Length: 275
Image 1 (cartoon, rainbow, N blue to C red):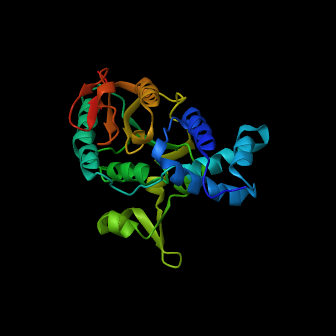
Image 2: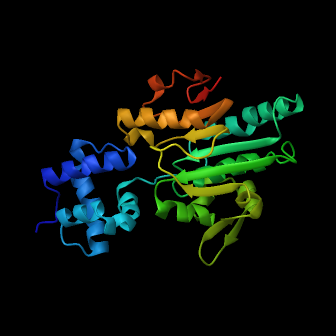
């Protein structure tokens, strides 16, 4: 069998399967890209052809392979402080707002933030950094940062709280030395307990409603660009359902969802509030 590229029929089967599985819409011109990514899983599973692999994924025996498949087809590009103005808002305006609300007796001294589609964890740990910088203002507060992703491979890395040497180019030295421990031999940096204690990582499919609710802020960035219009609408409904009254949604610049956010009040180009 030729495994250099998916046939049109095979490609269309995988398109439908991926859309149902996680909401991602694979464009018609991506047959070569998808072929290359699935070919890695053929080698990993020792299955000789695309047709056999597809049948395996659909079978009960292939359930454990789904995560390997998802890891192969999804893009996990991420970094600390990606789109820095979002985090400038979080560490200043947002923190000051919730602190003042607590002083006025308008809220409890607790904070829950969700990083949806967090990949390998740089975003939730950036959020934790912004809050840790404000320890003097948030002293005594109960703070939790939830990071979720559909890929078990990605979240296993996120759970470790260990990051590569690229962190040197992304996190200012002052914050890096204060909140991370360097492992020189492995050229890695590990988040110190003050950050790790804030962050919880778990697997979640954005197409499904998360079991938690009452989040004060949700970050959804650089992921919905890959979803179909119908899938985006479903994800937005799920996110809004999880938001507390008065909470905020931080969105990426290229998500293609702005016309779907009519139930929220626009506060800036990237910020929406649930009244």
